[in-house]
Amino acid sequence: MKPAHYLMNRCWLLAAVCWLTAALLRWGAAPAFEKLPADYVAETSYAATLRSRQTPSGPVEETQSIVRRRDQTLTGGEEHSIIQGDAHWLTKAGAVIFETLNIYGVDRRTRQNLAGYGNEERTGQYLFPPHVEKKTYGLWDPNYAGPSAVTFERVEQFHGVEVYVFNSVVNGLDESVGYAALPEVPEKYRALTYGHGRFWIEPVSGVVVDHEDNGVSYFVEPKTGAHVGEPLNQWTERFTPETIAAQLRLATTTRRKMLALELWLPLAFAAAGVLAAGRCLRRGGGR
Image (tube, rainbow, N blue to C red):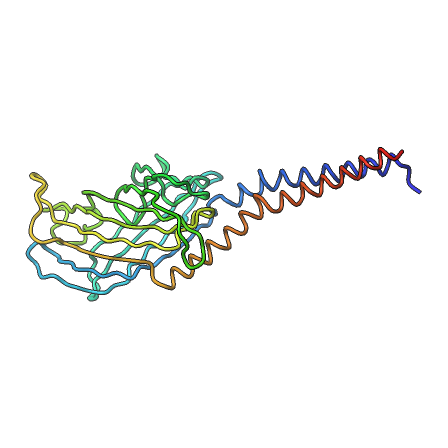
């Protein structure tokens, strides 16, 4: 039979291992998991309705289209990623109305744009962070060629998942670079955009499960700032059903893993440590 002090030492060792495991899960594994993956790649599609023209006096073309955004990590480090982000709007005939293709430097923990890493000095979020807060965020991503303000509105249920709903506003944003495929932009006219949108975000994971947007862009005379002719583009867009389904799967899976690493597994190991310590104390009191 093993001596009592040997069993006591093993008992306390077990308790310590359980508590250490809980701490490593909560403050080691959980933050590491919540970083943006080093090989992050994502693609979302929107069903869009467009009323667009190539020049201020040109004919309007109305079309139903699929707008695609793609994000792909090119390289990075422990704390940042260099991401190529692009978005493409096409008419039914295949003519490019709007497109962006840029390089973004992104903080892997906060999802914020990092100064000095992308092809342009940007501010705000590239993606929404884990544990989204009920506040206003600045957002600068491939959907627009500049920053927008995104403000918390309410909590609601979306396909059985609790989400935070945010409203976005763009007011007179210069998107001439995005409209550069048009024959007179930016050589003759600038292009200014006014838009309103809405995001449905699973708050723990920070995953956008649905996004809709609508707005209008105008040809603008550079010297006077006056609108010229009819709008160059009027649009509405929203995630396709397939994108919504894929984003919901991603959000619920990510949420479960985050809560397991942050809460359930650390609590289980901490409780096991308490039980082991209690057993040690009972043994010690019985000598």
